[in-house]
Length: 311
Length: 311
Image (cartoon, each protein chain N blue to C red):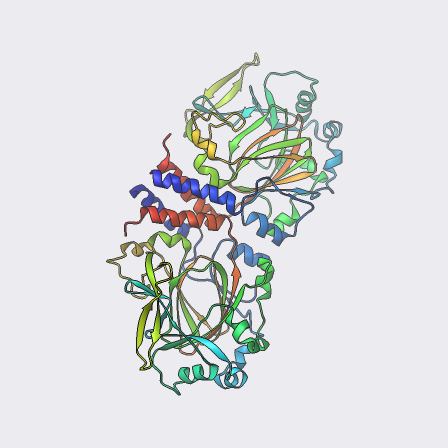
């Protein structure tokens, strides 16, 4: 399999020579739909778009006081973990957060330091939680991004609301969506890796489990014995274990910071790891990806990684 | 390498399940640029477009009499071969045509059977010959396809004129262009294979040579000893030698006939073989392809075919 591994390495290097950028480019306003499709969606390239949702009242309105008044009593789902890592590998398990139902005010109390509680809290439920749990907030924004909906010829499949503590981290993974990630306040920091770097990204298969917070505030890990094992990436791009995963040396991570008022276009199948400033508020739009020739090629790449895998 | 061959076979099958059509679809008029990009160029899928150049005077004007009057005295390049195969494998050589310079009237004399001459004649020079050799014909058509130029954000790189005898054949190959092939009179018959069928398409490397017609009308083959060897496809999809190339059994050729007034969108990197009705006139527009993620993936596929090749 050594010749195949060499071809995969050459392939990833060629991606960087041919068309990938060395940093994430900025667009200075909402793009034309056709141009956005041709320049970014088609080539599967990320970019940051400025001044594309400046007209959302949310940008100035979404202060803690306003949110308490508008939706303070609403009960929402919050991911709670001992260490900030929801949906991540811990030891030989894939551990999901304890899902708390709590009022929005209680979340703000924790974010603002008015209440101390054990664990790290993150409003991050990705089931179109903005529309389902907090529809009142739709007054302050648009339900989709018009130029993106035109470009893709469809409306978003989900609109999600994100609010969390500084230590809440999203571990490295990829999604089957074209993603527009809008930062309303604070800052998100992304580490991005193109699909063509897949040969250097380790995958394992893990027993699923959930954190359960006990009455004393301690967390225990409870296996979900009925569930199938979960494939996930054990590598932490903030501190990669290069002795264990030496191939990752050949990956080309791109880092970017997305600030309030900016929007990241995160293309389908790009690997990403996300951190944030404390209390950062963001909204993202997931548009279904097309299962076309690019997806077909990516599946080939994955299957080749399986047959050449040494770990 | 057997596991890799199996993955390549699964990949090609999945392409047919996921997104390829079982026949070439028709569009019933000129498409919107964004929609055409999203539905056909992005996914790299062929289609036939009707009523997209109905307004070209060429469709009614380009009779032999009109062409004799308008451009009869113009001298153009004509490919002459003993058997209709210009740019094709013959034995252990890649043989190119004898390029004749002759008046357009002389070509029409042969097409119309007014003059007998040895060899098969085909006006097929792909150097933007319409603009360079026959600019007078531009009065009867448009210099580009407006919706395609909008979709791709650029003008064509070349506009070619095609006119030839029934036995003139274009052997199977692929081009690095997005191709719009407009049939003005007669009919073209295409055999198309998607890039994902590359694992089943044999390639060889051949000594280049040219046909040279001698004074007595006989053809000799003259090696181009100064030139590098040429990679080409030895297989004839009209009569594939499946004993020699058994992998081709797994290919999924699509056949279509493009009639006068119809236009084929032939996506970049699709393999194609072309035949025609006698005296068929066509014009094609080559737009530069993008060297993006799809091209990157295709190069990986080619390199994997090299390492798994048994012939």
